[in-house]
Figure 1 (cartoon, one colour):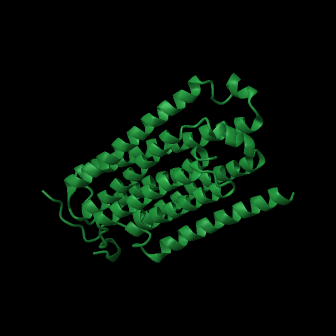
Figure 2: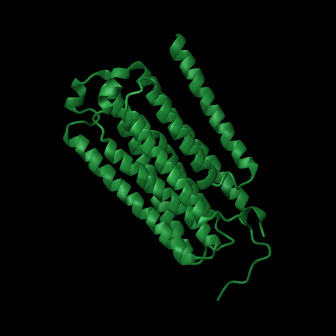
Figure 3: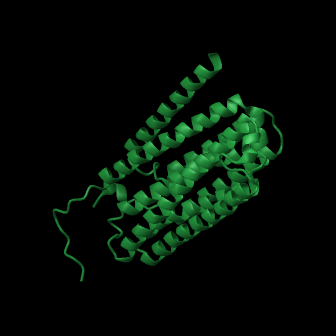
Amino acid sequence: MEKEHTHIVKYKTYVFVLIALLFMTFASVAITSINLGPYTVSAALLLASIKSILVLLIFMHLKFDKKFYSLMVGGVLLLFACVIFITFLDYLYR
Amino acid sequence: MNKPAHIDEHRDDEGAKTGMWIFIFTELILFGGLFIVYSVYRYLNPAAFHLAAEELDTFIGTVNTVILLVSSMTIAMSISAIQYKNKKLTLILMSVTILLAAVFMVNKYFEWSGKISHGIYPGSPTLMEASQGEILFFGLYYAMTGLHAIHIIIGVAFIAYVMVLVAKDEIQHDNFVILENSGLYWHLVDLIWIFLFPLFYLIT
C-alpha cells in the first residue's frame, strides 16, 4: 500500500511531547511572574515558538511526512516573518 | 459483509492532506494578521496593555492551555490507534478530545461572563471611560479569543463527524486521511492558543 502511511507514531512519543509542552507552559508562567523587564516578552515568545515547533513536528507529523509539507510550512512562516519585519520597519522609522 | 475492494478506487490521500495544509495556511495568515495588529497596538500603548492584561486571570488561562495541549495529544494518539486497528481506543481518544474541548468552552464562558459582569465588553460604558489602549486591548481580546472559540466549535463538529465515520467502519487502518485532517485542524487550534496565551494572559 502507500509507504507514507506505514509509519505509526508510538503512544509513548506523544506522552513525552505532552510532558515537554506542559513543562514549557509552566516555565513561561513562572518566567513572566518574576520581572525580567524587556526580556519577559522575548522569553515567553521563545518558549511559545519552541512549543509550536514541537506540535508541528510530532503532533502534526511533519517529521514523518514527506519533506514537501515541511517546505510549504517553512515558506508560509517565512512569508509571515517578512510581513512582520516590513510592518515594524514602517512603524519604527516613519 | 465487507464490500469487495475496488481496484480502481478514486482516492488521493496526499492530495487531501495537501489541501488541508493549504487551508491551514489561510487560517495561519488570518490569525497572523490579527497578531500583527496586536503587536503594533501594543508597541504604541505599552502601559495601557500592561494595565488591561492584569484584569485577565492567568490561572484560567493556564488551565485552558493544559486542556488544549492534552486534547491535542489525545487526537494525535487516535491516529496511531486506528493504525493499530484498535477501533475502540480510537473512539475513546476522540471522545476525550471532544470532552476536553467542551471543558475549555465552559471555562471560556465563565471567563467572558465574569468580564461582562464587571462591565468590560466592547462598547460598554466602563470601557468607554478607559484609555484608548485599554479599549484596543479588550477589543482584540474579545475578537481573537472569540474567533479562536469559533474554531474550537468547528473542530468539535469536525471530530464528531469523523467519529461517526470511524464507528461505521468507513475509516479503517488503511484509509484514515480524514481523521488525520481533523487532527491537523485540531492542532492548528492548539497552535493559535499557544501564542494567544502568553500574549494576552502573561503580559507583565
